[in-house]
Amino acid sequence: MTNIHDRLLIIDFGSQVTQLIARRLRELNVYCEIHPYQNVTDAFLAEFAPKAVILSGGPASVIDEGSPRPPSTVFDLNVPILGICYGQQVMMEVLGGKVESGHGTAEFGRAFVTPEAEKLALLDGWFEDDKEQVWMSHGDHVSKIAPGFEVYGTSPNAPFAITADTSRNFFAVQFHPEVHHTPNGAKLYENFVKMAGFKGDWTMGAYREEAIAKIREQVGDAKVICGLSGGVDSSVAAVLIHEAIGDQLTCVFVNNGLLRKGEADEVITMFRDNYNMPFIYADERELFLGELDGQSDPETKRKIIGKLFIDVFQKHAAEVGGAKFLAQGTLYPDVIESVSFSGGPSVTIKSHHNVGGLPEKMGLKLVEPLRELFKDEVRELGRELGLPTGFIGRHPFPGPGLAIRCPGEITRPKLEILREADAVYIDQIRKHGLYDDIWQAFVAILPVKTVGVMGDGRTYDFACALRAVTSVDGMTADYYPFSHEFLGETATRIINEVPGINRVTYDITSKPPGTIEWE
Ligand code: XMP
Image 1: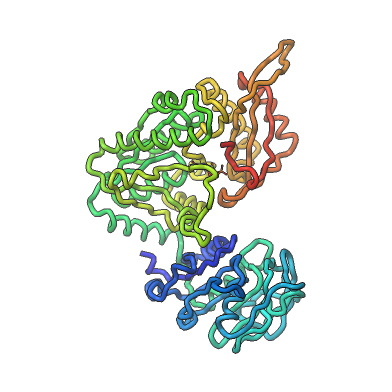
Image 2: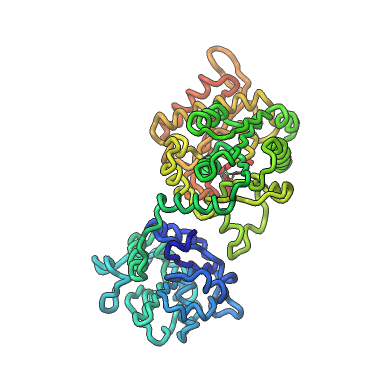
């Protein structure tokens, strides 16, 4: 499918910001994929057939023995190559230049690059004020450029900040043009892909058509089941697959008793009203809440929910009979994380569950039509498919639901209080027009009761915490800077409108060191 478009290959050396390179390129409607350097073999290159290559940054030192290298054949592909930071240094080293370590030449953070020679097409729109702010993050530096290269920009600590061999269309920069702290960086990518001849035809409309064709080809006349969480990803996947194969698809939506106020109705109505597709509503509240009764350890809760979800899904999927495929709303960041340079997270912070383990157990093959998309691209595809706007913009909601917003023991009365408080909080956020500026917002009910005074009486009720964060992908996050007026008004509303809560706090922890959810 993707071969219809010109493809750009990003070879990943493990930089924290490699995904941002892909973002910048997708914004230019250029199809690209990130692959860890170890996977980029000669055979891979031949099959991928990139029209241009970008070498990412990375934490290693080119000087160290055994440090990562791209296959040397990449330089014989006769396509434009852009090296960034470590990618620049590796290019110089491999092509005959020299890289040295530190001693007063390291640069971290903001720097200014000034032009050094005649105009380079890569730098169209740059240096209009004679200097450009860039973001540097390097300990090593290039001390001698490779034969054929010339210098086009320097910074105080990087004499070879921008270099190029224009005869081969090789470009190398010491800084990171993909980050926001290089304000004119997007222009550099635009110039690079223009020079490489990309048409910028990777649009959501095109993606939709191609994804549909690909699903039909993969599935044939077999049946597909889709575990619907009510979140944006699984909903978009379901609607796309339904458009491709119609009633061969059955969705299973499990109510585990841990959904937000009105959520089950919202999801059911959205699907029943808008899409005439086979839909199983599995009301399993008693089962989940019964098994969770008395459990307070976060990982135990997660494991119970994960296991029950699989059991329930399996039971209802059996009603469909003979399904050969399981549809999932896996996104590109999930795919990258599992094959990343660093081999993914080394410690389990939380055992995220969705339907892991299910395909093997049931002998199902996976259909994952969103594997190539970022979250905001999924939202764009959702709009393209005509999903209601309010639905598409919904904040992410975790698989284990309210269980992980109820630290300590889960009880039905606590869940009920939490649902009400959360509804008031979200209503406040919407009324103040802040919903779309926030990545995720919710209330956590705390396992502590505190004393208060309401009217002339004493109260002894639960305390709760409000959480709201900004984030790009959920991997890192910062708390949302609400005004004091907003916080005060919201606290008053929650205490007045939600019996059972008499104290409201605001969580101002970033991630790291905190996580977004409380468990
Ligand atoms: P944390 O709390 O790890 O959350 O900072 C990061 C993002 O992931 C969501 N989350 C989950 N999503 N299953 C999911 O589908 C899970 O088990 C799970 N745990 C956390 C969380 O809501 C946030 O968006």
